[in-house]
Length: 197
Image 1 (cartoon, rainbow, N blue to C red):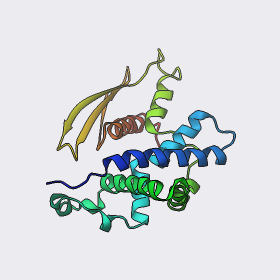
Image 2: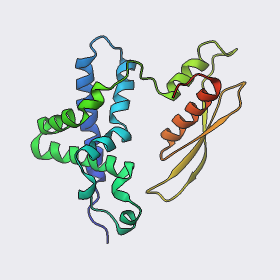
Image 3: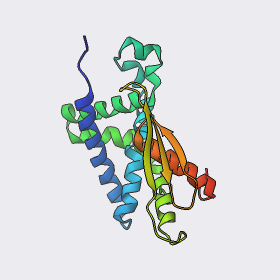
Image 4: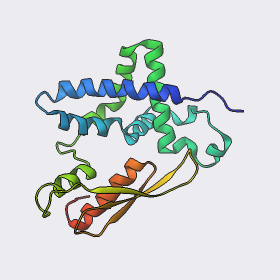
C-alpha cells in the first residue's frame, strides 16, 4: 500500500529549477557562449547541487519514505534529498507562483552560483576535446559502453567502460549511467595526466 509519489512534482521542479538557473546564468555571464552557459547550468541543476540545497533547508527529516529506506539511512541519501528538493521547488511554484520558486532557488543556490569555477568543463567534455584535438592520429569520439547494471530499480549501480583508440580502456561507476560515464572519463584522464583533482 503505497502513498502518493513525488515523481510528478520532481519532473516539474526540475524544469522550474532549470529555467531559474538559466535566467540567472544568462544575466550573470553576458558574453559567455551557449556551451559555457550549458556547462554551468549542468553544474547547478545536477543531483549534488539539489542535495546540497536540501541539506541547507534541512529537508531530510520531513521526507516520508518506506521503512526499508529509513533503516538504510534514506534521509541522508543524495538521490532522495535531490528528488525531494525538486518536488519542493514544484510545490512552491504551484502554490506561490514563479517568484516563490525563484526566491527559494536564489537563496539556497546563492553560494553555488558564487563558487562556480571559471573553467567548468566536466570530465567527458575534457576527454572528448582531447581526443578530437589532433593529439591522436584520427580525431575520434570516446566510446562509452554499459558493462553492468545491478541493484534494485530504486537504487541501481552502473559500471561503464570508456575506450579511446590507442589507449587501454577504463571503467567507472555511478548511481546513474551519466555518473558512471563521468567517472570512467575522469579515471582515464587521470591515467593520461590530463585531470587535476
